[in-house]
Length: 489
Ligand SMILES: Cc1cc2nc3c(=O)[nH]c(=O)nc-3n(C[C@H](O)[C@H](O)[C@H](O)COP(=O)(O)OP(=O)(O)OC[C@H]3O[C@@H](n4cnc5c(N)ncnc54)[C@H](O)[C@@H]3O)c2cc1C
Image 1 (cartoon, rainbow, N blue to C red):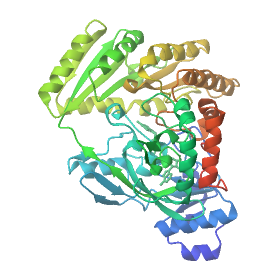
Image 2: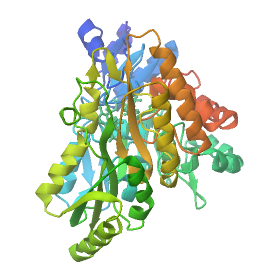
Image 3: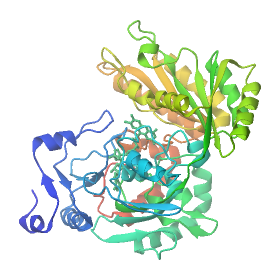
Image 4: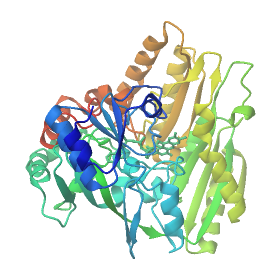
């Protein structure tokens, strides 16, 4: 229970009733943890007061946005700090950036930016529900990361409240506070280790992003909060870079005989510089109860290849050349150039995970553990058959889709959750697949994060020396380990 002194200071509400705690005990993962209370701050001083209070008493605190995290990132036994309710102002839309509070829902920001011809490119399929705070803390991305990068690439400045209640504005042109200041020499002395240990991929949401903090002799301390899952501080304001919406888009839809033909074609497709290359839901479902089309799965592996830019003629030429190059390998192809057809096609792709989250066959469920691994796209021909081989070994049905142009595959096996073998199978799968990911210098998480499900594999992925750095960083920012404990380290 909160003491009277603090209650008098707070403007926001503290909820301890069973119903509010129950709602906040789940997110979009398989986990459930009951928080001791849910705090809904009204302003920054509410956040700092609550952090000070929790810090003095060693109570864990976890920020929560839309609660759409897939790995249990926003779940805690301590205090949930619900940022989504009151921190939802778009403060200022500038020429090349936007200043927002972290509770703004991505789709709401998209709508406001569109009026100015701008957008914030990372586009999770959950954009109608997820918040910018959650996107930053998970380093979210989406179909257009191939051309535009992930949330980390758009972070300019952040206001952060640390575990002891102190506040800081963090950015490349602001003198670093003592936490960000003491991080820098540590990074500079380990640049070689970091370069050798981080994944050779275009996206990564696993661990802390130490590889992105120093570039071209400049220090970008705000990036340490990208993908940190709220373990280093609570973000209360963010300045994000925006870009112009491209004038034209063209979509090439290609169907292949099998996955091998498709994978062989990826490097060729990438040579035409598409803005997105997406694999639609595809998989193996042996049960008679599960019909492919009913469950949103295609019969033949199908990809979307998007070209976007300012000249329709150039885009049409690129799409035609790409289509000709694929003529031998794909069984059908179609070019969509009108907005309505492109939007309809993209909606189908966006719904992939929604379909899959509803997958069940009796007690068999689509389990999110491998989830969103990534390897360099040139290695997909080795990596995907490897995953299929493992599914075969355990006789598991599965579904696959995702951002194949980046080498980022979303895949879930159907596992009988009530079987006594379920936990053992999940652990074997994770061990085998994550070992292969490490061997190929990929990442166990391209965009969905580590959370409760995968934090324990971080040491395996980065090695003991980098993991030791992660522990030191956690100590610098949150000595008492009260900020979303159990995630990352
Ligand atoms: C159907 C579906 C589709 C999805 N598709 C995608 C996709 O295409 N791409 C993708 O990247 N992800 C996707 N996701 C995952 C998820 O939606 C994203 O990671 C999203 O950005 C999470 O945002 P949220 O507001 O729901 O965060 P939450 O789940 O509430 O929180 C996520 C993490 O962020 C932290 N956090 C939240 N706010 C703050 C803050 N203000 N300060 C510090 N930490 C904070 C939390 O503590 C937690 O660790 C999908 C999820 C679903 C359910």
